[in-house]
Length: 106
Image (tube, rainbow, N blue to C red; front, side, top):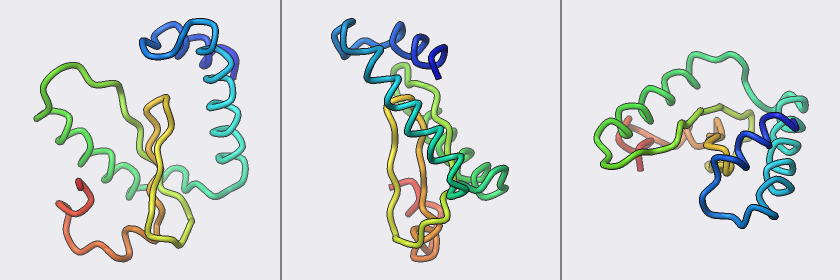
């Protein structure tokens, strides 16, 4: 957790330097807890597919964008969330209500 937090804090351009390390330590601790809970499908072809959609979207974007890693969760609600380290978590419930790939992109 510490190494990842230190790396994220160093590359951070938004938070004050004093606040960045504690913030990213919390982000990484939450992410670790989420993975250890079993609520994230690992590895999963659907996560890879969602990642490819994100990759195609980023190719069309102007400017430098941070690396984004997509994870699929077991949560049934039609929702998703992201963390400050570029992790995007998509609930399986969201995929259940979408009809097209372009809806994922929105």
